[in-house]
Amino acid sequence: MANSSSITHFLLLPFPGTRQMQLLHFCLFLAIYLAALLGNGLIITTIAWHHHLHTPMYFFLLNLALLDLGTTSITVPKSMANYLRDTRDIYYTGCVVQVFLFPFFMFAEVSLLTIMSYDRYVAICRPLHYEILLGSRVCVHMAATAWACGFLFALLHTANTFSLPLCQGNALDQFFCEIPQILKLSCSTSYLRELWLIVVSACLSFGCFVFMVVSYVQIFRAVLRIPSQQGRHKAFSTCLPHLAVVSFFLSTSFFAYLKPSSISYPSLDLVVSVLYSVVPPAVNPLIYSLRNQELQAALSQLIPGCSQKQ
Image (cartoon, rainbow, N blue to C red; front, side, top):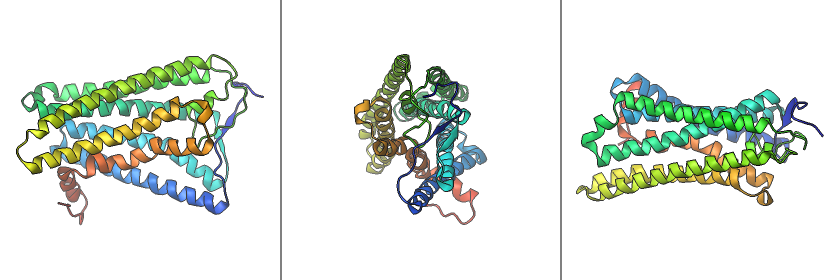
């Protein structure tokens, strides 16, 4: 038995199986992490380098890439290091950092994705008002608000989580310090306060999702009026993957944070956490950015020998 003041480290979920399986798990995480670093790094560099990409849409894409880099970098490297060294330890301060930064990046990303759907709505449905509604100063304020929302929610969640007395040991059934797993260690009913905060956060995130759906519905209605079949195909091929990725990201994160403890199993929790914390940062560059022909052209100028796909 231990309380939160006496805990100096936590034990993360061990990967079952032989040493070879642990190394295979390490290689899988390494491949995903390198894909996230490469994709998001290329987006950040390309947008920052080319001045003609300094527009609202690419400004938001740059912020999304920064958030994706943060999301994957706060959890995956520590997990890889543990599997490589065949250990489970994470220091208490390291766990606090993960609990703060991971919700910070998550909530900021949900807010930014909502802003990006509004940007696409204005660009397609109200193009004549685009410069007025999304000027440079407005875009900076909107992006700053997204980051500030993430910071506020992360601060509240971290303060609530680590103010709880922890007397159920220090072993977490997850590959990183996830709030629901830490709440399982609490021996006080005060954890209900954090649960309510999670529910409120989930409701706000769902409200953002509804806003995105409404925005894309309006976009689809406008796209259907486009006489060119090629134009309709281009708009649908851009918007539908966006909506699919957001739905996948939110549904898996909702399941991870709101599922009842009766259906909580280490293997299930591991798969779900990978789906919402590791996979999206790796696929977002492909879905949101690298399929964009203008960004491909700028990337081909930045990297000699990189051919533009038509």
